[in-house]
Structure formats: structure tokens, C-alpha cells
Image (cartoon, rainbow, N blue to C red):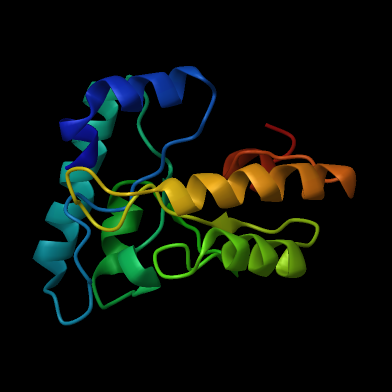
Amino acid sequence: MNVQRLPGTTRATASAGHEIGNHSYSHPALYLRSPRFISSELSAAQSVIADTTGVTPTLFRAPFGARWFGLREAQRELNLLGVMWTVLGLDWKLSADQVASRIVARAENGAIICLHDGRGIRANPDISRTLEAVERIIPVLQSRGYIFETVSQLLCPNN
């Protein structure tokens, strides 16, 4: 839904070289949902992302990290690799200082950092804490020799 609501932002993000993965269409918790519901959520997101960016996602992360019966089959049908995080910023509830400290303390080689561009599908989310935290995190991690890559670059370095 966010891709439909902000197609220009989505296209600009993809054009800048960022990888856009499937995170479902409406960001529901997938537990206690039917396989048909799960499949429709993933399929709808695939279509909207592909139609908007011209690129079909190959990666999926379940909303809230919650997986349920039927998810594996839906991912298989859409050729989606499930990816989780290794460092969760909790940026929807912590201050920028706390998020930055949390990420910097837990980052390690190969880490997948999970931050948010809002919470759920709110129309105008306040992401100032996340942006402020990222402005602090990147220089610290770069000074430690880390480089930033897409998930596909991290998982498939020879492609």
C-alpha cells in the first residue's frame, strides 16, 4: 500500500540502487491467517512493486517477523527468499540516541539491520528519530571499516 501511495518515492529509491523487497501489501500480522490470505498479501505486493519499479522483488520479510502456516508455500510460488534481521533498531519506540547506540553495539560483519520508514501503513509517519539515528550510525560503522550493501549483495556476493 505504501508503494501505491508513494510511487515517486519508490521509483527514486529503486533508481538510487536500493533493493526493494516484499513486506506484504498491507502489513498485517500473518499469524492466525489462512494460506490464501497470506498468498494474496504477498502476490499483491509483488504486483504493485513490479508495476511501480519495473523490478520484481526476490526477497521477503514478514511483517513483525511473524511467520505462519502457508507462508513458505506463498514464498515458493513467488520465488521469494525469506530474510530476517540480525539487529533490530526498535526505532518505532526508542529515541534516536537509543536506536543509534543499540545498532552500533550490535552490528557485526554480515549484519542485517532492521529500521523502519514508518510504522505500518500510516499516511505521514514521523521518521525523524530513524533518520537522526541513521545519520549517527553510518559514520561510526564506516569508521570501523564496515561497508553497506544490499541484502542480495550480502547473501549472493558472486552475482
